[in-house]
Each structure stands twice: as C-alpha cells, then as structure tokens.
Length: 465
Image (cartoon, rainbow, N blue to C red; front, side):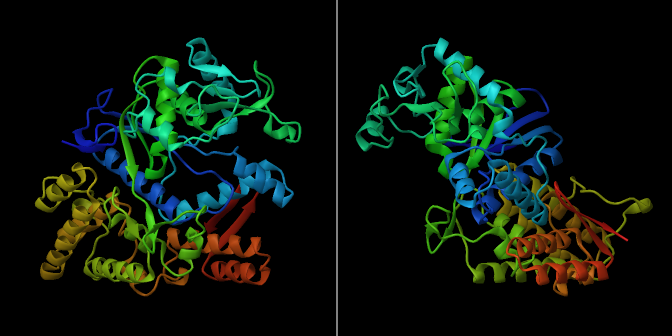
C-alpha cells in the first residue's frame, strides 16, 4: 500500500488513483535561460525515481514535465545576448537534455513548451473571466481576482489577511487588490514581436502561473492524480495554479501535491537568484554522473540536501561498496538464460518495497541494497547478486560493469552510455566557451573508443562503430 506525503493535507495518505492502475503526474520543469544547477538535478532525479517506482509497481503512468520557454528572464537574457528567444531557449533545452541523460533521467511522456499552448491559456483565461474571477485592468493586463476565489491559501496554509499584512505580492496601482496576480501581460511597445500573441484583450503574453494550469489540464485532464515540483513553488506558483484551475473548471485540480526539499550550500538554498549554485555540468567534471544521482537519492526527497565535495566523495565510496559486491559475481542472466528482474517475493525485495511504498523512502531502500550487498559478499551467490542489480535498476543504479565503474569510469574503460553522455556535455560546454581544442580532444577520445558523434540542429547524437 503506497503512501504519499500530500502537501495539501499535510500528512501521509494512501495513494488511490482516480482511474484504477493509472497515474497521471505533472511536474513543473525548467525555465530555460541558463544551464541547470543541482537544484534542478534534484527535481529531475526525484520525480524520475517516482516515475520509475510507479511503473515498477504496475501502474500505467503518464508523466508530464513542462518547459517554460517564455518568461521575463528569458526575454532579458536574449536581449543581453543579442539573439532570438528561440535560439536561446533551444540551446538551453538541448543542454538540459544532455544533463538529464547523463544523470540517467528518463524522458517524461510529454514535455510541453509553454509557447505551444498559448491558445489553451487564452481559453482558460476566458473561462475565468466568464466565472467572474478575472478582469482586465486599466494598464491592459488581465488579472486573477484572488479574494473572489474561496479557499485561496489552502495549499500553503496562508490566510488572505496574513498575505495582505506581509505584502507578499507586489502592489500595482491598476490591480483591484495587491494580492491579485497576472494572467495575461499586455504587450509593451518596446517588446519584440516574438513575445506577443493576439487575444481578445489585445496583444500580450501569458503570465507564468497560467502556463502550467493550461498545459496540465490539456494533457492530463481537468482533474489528475499528482502535481510535483520544488518546495519553493508551493507558494505562490502552485497556490495560484489551484486557484486558476479550480476557478476555471469548477472541480478539484489535483489529489496529491508533492514537493522536494532544497539543495543547500553552506546551509542556504542553492539558487541562481542568490548566485550560490553549481551547474550540473560543473559537478560532472569532477564526479561520475551515477555518483551524483546516488547522492540525490541518499536523502529523502522532502529533506534538505546539503552539497559539499566531502558528501560526494563519501557517496562515491558508498557506491564503490555496492559495485564491489557485484564484481566477480555473474549478473548477466538468470535461470534459463533470461535476464533476471526483481523477485518481489524475496525478503530483501519485500523490505525494499515497504520502504519505497512509505513515501518513496529511498534512504531506507538503499540501506536494503547495502544489506543485500553484504549477503553477496558473504555468500558469493549469483542469485543474490542478480537481485541486487535488479533492485538497483528500479532506482536507475548499478547497471554498469563493476570493473569499469571501480576503475574510475573513463569512457575507454567500458563506453558506458551515461559516461558518454557526460563526455558530450563536457564537449558542448567547451564549444560554447569557444575552447575548440578541448572539444576536439573529447571528440577524438570518443572516436578512439569507437564512439562517433553526430551533431545536428536538434543536438548531438552518438553511435558505436
């Protein structure tokens, strides 16, 4: 029986899907104006873990993770770089995919871009206006009337009075109330045409909050199972999503809200706005991608994750212990020559499942792997080693040749897919820094190991020869 901590209920609740054996899940993705940092890595890895566990548990899963490709920061950065918004966002979408692939993150079933769903956003805003929850202000913006929506604050636990007293929302004189937030931003004459769409309220572009509401309802329905994202999105973004979606469709929006904790550096949230962040590709220069994934999964997804080289070094040693247990024990095929999956009736697997069913308790699940590794070391049992590798696969771990990982993980020592992806990340970063000598060195090193890179407008692919 799977239980999930539901932010809306502030408690762990048994997961009951809207449709039997089916999960519809939406996760807020990246705003693509820069490289992804470790905070983004945590969101990607955490919900990849959730996605994998639902599938391992027999559910049919539809996983949507959006891309915000129109935003004030994007517009500003494109202007600073003297490039089009499409050029800027495509560059960082490609980089995001490179980072995610290196970390073993599976692609979601749908990855909608905000700019592709503007008609759906306009339809939702029109519904809100018809329901008396939206109005066009004197400055041309269309705003959501917060005080007209009963229950605003139920996700974050904030009352309207507390919000008003704390002045958590920037006051704009044309709003009916300082708490009201923008649904449609009226176009300014100075803005480029590529950031303007026609609407009944005049040319403009969508506000950030309406984007996820429209994409979620279009791809998953007006009422779906799970909505996830970082803890920093709980307010105001997710609070506003509830208000918009329930205000437009007159039904419950989401049953379970999941929020992962922050990545911290020196006990402070890691973020671009604070300037105290490491990009994924910076970290991958020093550490194997599987070590970074393992580091993220060692902490419970709701807990703070404290980043340091010492913690990653310790993670590497811990992962070494698991791979050492697999070294020298055949884990290629099970009985009858078939590749072995998890034996869910076996005691270690039952403990693993109990941990994962308890709000995705990956620290406890990993503890089971270490206990099983001790059993492998003691018995040298191929069956136990196969079980260890199969359980690791559920978390996206332990799928490489042990010797290759333990020898340091260079591409020449096994050409593992995740390591190849990491090398491609490093090469693309070198090219963007105009360090063409380094980019060419990486390409030649891969070629020497039988890996051919193929560059295209969509990104870099590779194949073995």
